[in-house]
Amino acid sequence: MPASRHLFAPGGSLPPQLNDDGRALVSWLQGLGRARRDVYAGFRAAEPEIPAPGAVAVAARREQGRRLYALWCVPCHGETGDGRGPAAALLAVPPRDLTAGRFRFKTTGAGEPADDADLFRLLTLGTGTGAAMPSFAFLDPEDRWALVVAVRDVSPATRGADLRFRPGPAGAPPAAAAEPAGDPARGAALYAAWGCAACHGSSGEGKAFDDSATRGDGEPVVRTSDLRHACARRGGGSAAAFERALRFGVGTSMPSFAAVVDRDPDGARAVLAWLERGTTAPSPAASDRP
Image 1 (spheres, one colour):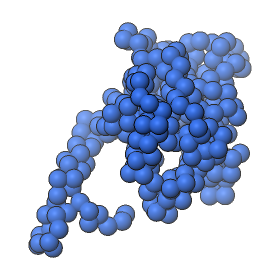
Image 2 (cartoon, helix red, strand yellow):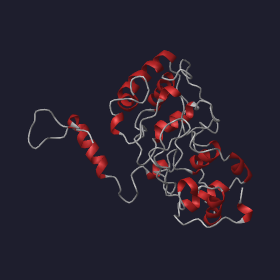
Image 3 (tube, helix red, strand yellow):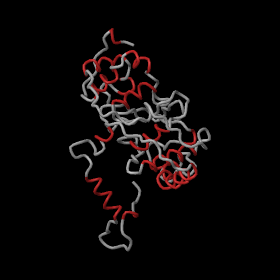
Image 4 (cartoon, one colour):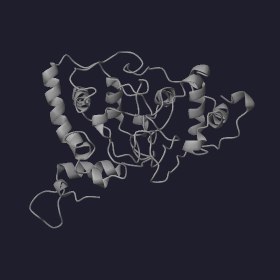
């Protein structure tokens, strides 16, 4: 926990007096945990709207992205995006090396760059409880699109072009209709049948791993996500986010389960319904084995 002198008024008065930013932060902290695990529970449980980017000149959007990146991203990810910013040493898990262009929560195949809508969604939601990547939903959508360009530009594999927004599954606004609930009892059996407990624990609580464990990209595996709560599911807390993770996998740490999702379209929602009940998974029935 570093010193936060920038949150106090200058002058050295006793007791120290918070400035406007300090008072705003204290107000936000005092709201945590009231009736929900945190104030973002409802926010993360819904799919964020991903509006189409406005008609902004490429050069202007890129320059705005550079300014915003310097303000919000450099402390953790570094000026060049290599994950070695001045705050990196304070984090239990090193910030992502953006120069590699590899992202975990996306709607593209293994080895392919993330879709721009995926990056916008990640900037909007953050990566959940216990992670260092915050939500930037407070930024104007055009500012978040500018940051998408800035993040792409630090990687040689994706830099140079303007946004590539594709309306559809990755970028469409969420449907207004409520999603039907799944069958928790069936979800418990599927959770066991699909082998989820091996990494996420018997009830989806997440598991800690030895410090020497690494993913295929060389980054450490410290703990798998707690799947029981919207705030702790790293790629988002909605049913759509849960299905995305199953369908496309999660980086090199979790393979794609697209085959089982396609074979059982209601299975993901059933598993999620069981996880959010917090019950213990039974042994899988023979009919549920993949």
